Length: 178
Image (cartoon, rainbow, N blue to C red):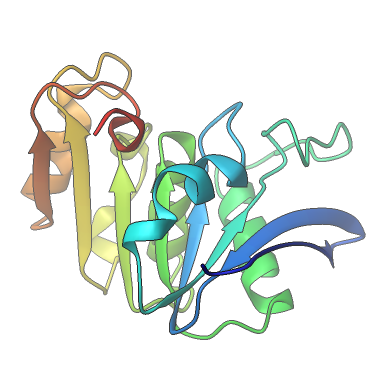
């Protein structure tokens, strides 16, 4: 059994909770609105052998919610994610995000922050991101019954040359359904 450890790091004078599990290549996982790092660890981490998973809590989640973090610009969450990754001293991670976390990951990649690849599950806000600025491989995953992240988000990913997979029968977020 692989040990899970809960930790805290300061980013821009804010306490940020993160959970670490496993050993190997770094993977940073970003939850959706009202979810937490625990959702990634509880549902997905056992199948990710060979990775050191850093599941981070974002300011819009219940465990690290911050009334002092008020995004003013669309890229603020992506910049915050970069601050977390930098504070954790993680280099070239695979970054994974779901829903709002998926939008955060796409923005992070479009800003050119370091990553080996990206995986987004039902990301929202795709049409507001310049996907042509992303220089690493990205996999987009949608549930066939996703009613939150519309087909236009999936189509935008495809048009930009990114691989898209659909999980039959899954909703939003698909990673919790299958």
